[in-house]
Structures are given as C-alpha cells and as structure tokens.
Length: 70
Image 1 (cartoon, one colour):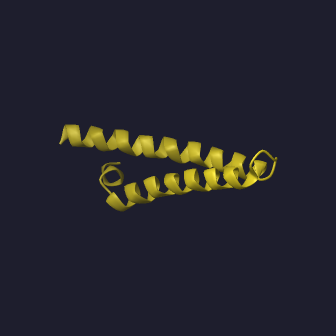
Image 2 (image 1 turned 30 degrees about the vertical axis):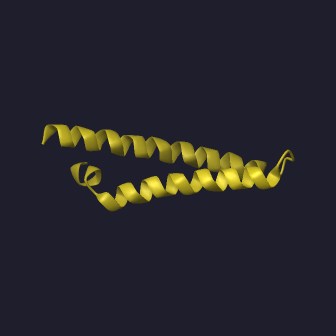
C-alpha cells in the first residue's frame, strides 16, 4: 500500500481521468441540451466517475496516513 500511496504517476493518472470524465460528461450534456440524447453514455460516465472518485479519495486517505506515520 505504501508504494501505491507514494506513487506520483498513479495519483496524476487518477486525478486526470476523473477530470476527463467530468469534462466529457458536461460536453455531452451541453450537446444534448434538453433532448434525451446520450442518456446511456452519460449514465455510464457518471458511474465511472463515482468509482474513480472513490479510488482518488482512497489514494488521498492512504497518502495522508503514510505521511503521518513516517
């Protein structure tokens, strides 16, 4: 776990992927407007965002834990 918490590329990839999902979701929502286009895609992006958000939160928590204990 310590190597996962201190691995900067893992943190960068995790945060960047969450940001890409947010931007993609908002772009699709803006393109669709009030119509029901991209509903399934936006739903999957929301689910994926939730999973990645939990992963980023977990990485942040273990990083602070290991910084505190060292």
